[in-house]
Length: 145
View 1: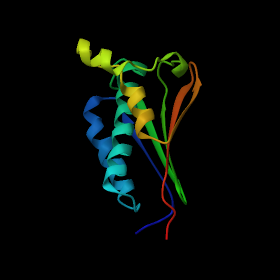
View 2: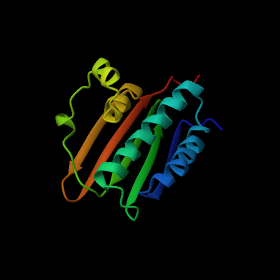
View 3: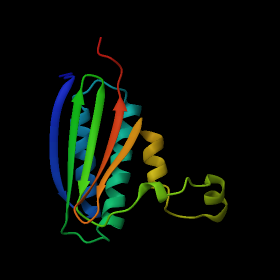
View 4: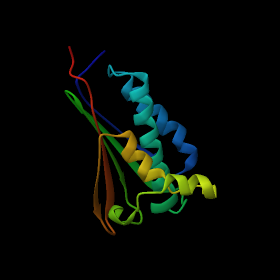
């Protein structure tokens, strides 16, 4: 099936053990969409990074919280919303990393947001402190022929 319109959503508990289930969910959704394996891999990695950040930073590794993922495809625009109810942050305060410095100092971590922005066409945030955090990942797909 190559649907150009779909809506799917799922809820996961905030544990790193669920990252495999999240990847499986996104892989299943993307299997219905005619795009290259390379683009699918980029989307899966971006979602994985976003959810890892939520688990580590918004929920501080507490496993009993919810991560909601909503996937919408409308013709050529794929939109993935990832919602959590944990600690908020201001994405504008996250500096663009110096990749050479990361490599030189063997630093681990801190590249997630940079990677997500590099993998997706648009990344936006809707953060209501103390209520919920929402990151929207967009990928613009080739028009169906």
